[in-house]
Length: 109
Image (cartoon, rainbow, N blue to C red; front, side, top):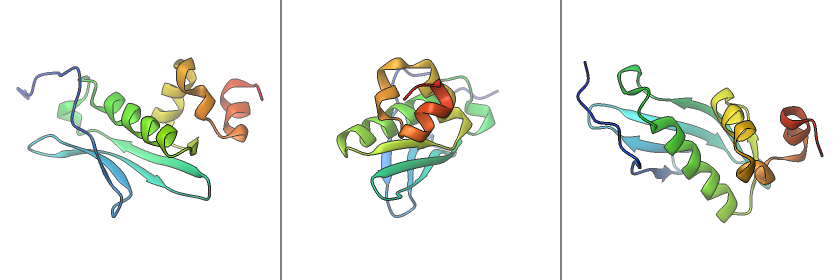
């Protein structure tokens, strides 16, 4: 069993060359991949190594990605199901949704 403790916050860095947010876990890396269509950020895939699941790592990646979207004034297209589920559950970030995805996830304009 992995002995890496759960932490309230992880150090997330944007790696624009690889188009992903990353958390170095020591023995592996957790990632949230994205592309940058005009005026938006499209989150396409999130991956946390299985032996690190359940520690809030994926949520930390999402929070950092959404904070970057807000800072850069980009609308979010959550292709990744993990991002979509998070945004559906967290009203405080739903204003970031691209209008098409707002309708798709929330049924509203």
